[in-house]
Every structure is written in C-alpha cells, then in structure tokens.
Image (cartoon, rainbow, N blue to C red; front, side, top):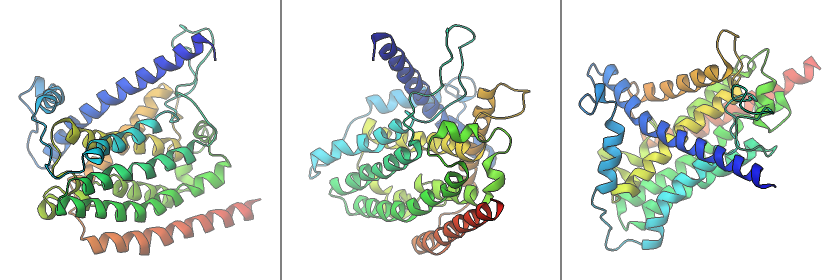
Length: 332
C-alpha cells in the first residue's frame, strides 16, 4: 500500500470516528427530547437554545467528575471492561457502507466508496464483533466485587446469548436472497425492490432482537435500576461510566445502519432526494423507533424475556428461513 492510499484510509477512519462520536453525543439529546414530548414535558432546555449544548455540558461534567474505584475490585478487568464494550462496536463501522460511490462534488478524480473498507464477509465480521462486546459487560459486572453488579452481568450474558441466536438467524433470509455476505452488494441488489418486501418477518425479528441486544426497554434487565441498583455498571463513575453508554448509543447507530442496509435498501430511493439523504432518513427512522419503544412499553419480567426469545423468536426465525428457502426453490 502506497503512502497516498494509507493517508486516504486514515482520513476516512478519522472522519467516520469523529462523526460517530458527534452522533452518539447528540443521540442522548434526541432521546431526552423525544421521551420528553411523549411524556408531555420539554426535556433539556437550559444549556443553549432548547438544550442544544446539553451533550457538551454532560461530556465536560463526566470528564471532570471524581473517578471512584471500588477498593476490592479486580483492577485489570475493572479498567478493561469499558474498552471491551466500546471497541468492538467502533470496529463494526469499518465495513458498514454509508452510501454509493462518489467523487465528493468533483473534488476527486476517481469515485470512492463511502465506507472505510470491504472484506467480502462483512456480515460475518459484524456478528463476530457483536458477540465480543458481551465480554465488556460481563467482566464489568464481575470485577466490581458487587453482588448486584454481578447479577446484572450474568443477566446480560444470558440475555445476549439468547437473543444473539435470533438476531443472527433473522438475516439468513437476506443472505439467501442476495447470495452474498458483502453489505455493498446487498444494497446494490435492492435497487428495484427492498428486501423488507420479501422479508417482513425477518425485519421484525431483527428489530426485536436488536432492541434486546442493545439492552433497551422493554429488555433492559441487565441495568434495571428498580431491582439491581443500575446493574452491571453500579460502581463505575466518570468517563468509565460514560464509555458504557457511549457503547450503547454507538450500538444503536450500528444496528440502525445494518438494518437499513439489509432490509431498507440502503441509499436506494426515489430520485427526488440524494442517495445519502435517503440513507440518513432510514437510519433516523430506525433510531426513532428504538427510542419510541422506551417511552411506550414497560420492562418485561426476566422469565418473560427468556421465554419470548427461546420459545417464540428463535422458532419463528427458523420458520422464516424454511419458508424463504421453499419459495426460492419453487420460483426457480
């Protein structure tokens, strides 16, 4: 690889990382505003116009907040766990495409792809990383020497193992239809018809399992403040506490981007809007739905959560794969 190509890839990494961190910061404001309007209140209003500077104020507060460390904690895993939560999520964005090829309004001589890189097995890479992020929460709950945090970490492990199966199986229909694991090629195959038309059940399974994987309401048992004093992050403070939630909000963006690429046609849409705008609108719609669920549904009991995953979502995923395969066989 020559110096020019290396510099260009470095620039793409920095741009994606910078925009992602900015999105994560302002996603907290979006959620607080949406939940505020659902509950007939205003949300943040005082830090800047309509609270526009609230994420910056929160970041400054968390950065300078006292960093309390549990005396009996396992120091290695206590410090390592927040990084183990956020790093796998950030690595997912290396293969997620954000748009079609572009010349950046004619600034470049040759068109470039709006993603950092492509490895041909993008879906496999993403699901491998999503499994690794579990270790951050489990080690975090265990390392604090706190029974409530440990219980939250164990709940997280059981929940992710349960819903990871349905989460993975939900995209098998798309893989069968496209015949590839490359996300860019999957989007290209949706120019005429989005895969949600052929896979509505797969999309609903994906969205439900994604909410459970994200530990969001109504599946937020690992951080249930009413019974586990905030669960796996009970004894974290300052930026280590913030990193857990940066990982959660970055995961929301990642799941929304992946769902857009797999089921909603990516950047494909009517020509009245630029492709990148279509992509952003679809991602925003999925993020809004995930936030909307938090203001709508109560938390499930733990037995309900496990039964729903193993006795409903996973069997439904296998039925969806079987029906998709049968229809493809009959059509051929």
